[in-house]
Amino acid sequence: MADWKEQSCVKFCFTLLKTASEKHEMLKTAVGDNAMRRRQAFDWNSRLIRGKTSVEEY
Image (cartoon, rainbow, N blue to C red; front, side, top):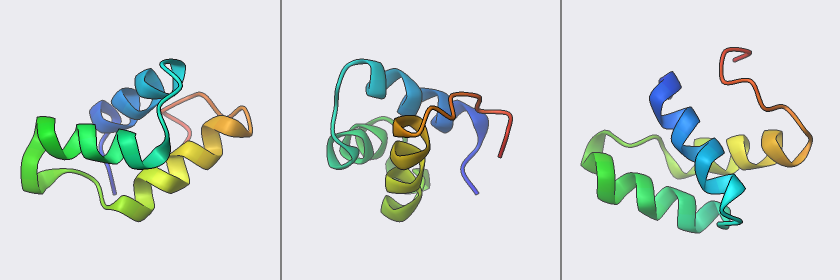
């Protein structure tokens, strides 16, 4: 499971209108091999699109 810091980064990238793929690439650049899995980035993107903005919910 991704930690709240990565989830917050995904949320930040969402506000910049980045695609899920772009978000995941940015995380990999910042965190390296410890970044959340691609599927997790896409799941978080879907949650944000549906309006689930709290990183503490999951």
